[in-house]
Length: 236
Ligand code: C5P
Image (cartoon, rainbow, N blue to C red; front, top):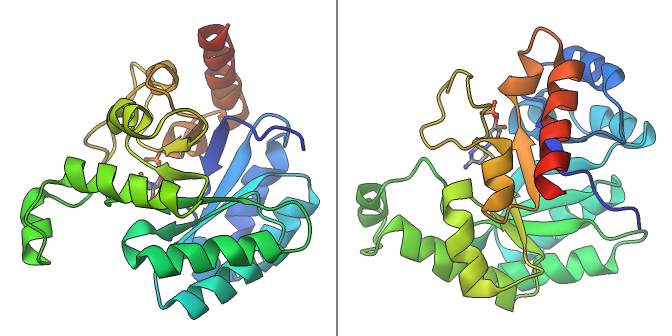
């Protein structure tokens, strides 16, 4: 299987035309594409099929969280779309994670990477107390990442600053997917904890999810090329 690209461009668009217009300009050898809830709810699976047909590795970021049977069916349906990566919430528990793993393994064709969201980075320790958990976000993230690993999933989505702790807790081979990436001199937008692409790599990230620094750039193709050049230099 060809390795997945390091950078997944987050196509946070409200309509298929805008998402596909950008996809049209990008090269599937230079990046993967991330499709999230807004685009999927608006436009359904058809844009994803078109991206897959064009040769893109697609990360279907729908963060499934439901009873095991429902999540397993959703994961199987996502795998049938031919996506390269999909995700679930680790807090769905062992039975749900295991059911997702088994459904993806049973899928025809190359299995997508199955990763889990541990603790949403928007949540604070106070939010966790409100829902009945007395610990802090960092220790819950490590605990849920260990559960994810024990259930045989391929990795987790995490903020880049958390990546070294997760790598230490779980070891090599477990995929770390990190959003919250900004270029050194760029606007933070609404991201509170940001790192540069090369810092994310140094922290142990395997895949970088990057949205606005590419999608809102005057020249998205050039912005992606510059990021890939920085990553290639950092990895050399
Ligand atoms: O535009 P930007 O680079 O901030 O986009 C980051 C993408 O990663 C968005 O699609 C956002 O929803 C997603 N994401 C995130 N933080 C998380 C999980 C996902 O920014 N903790």
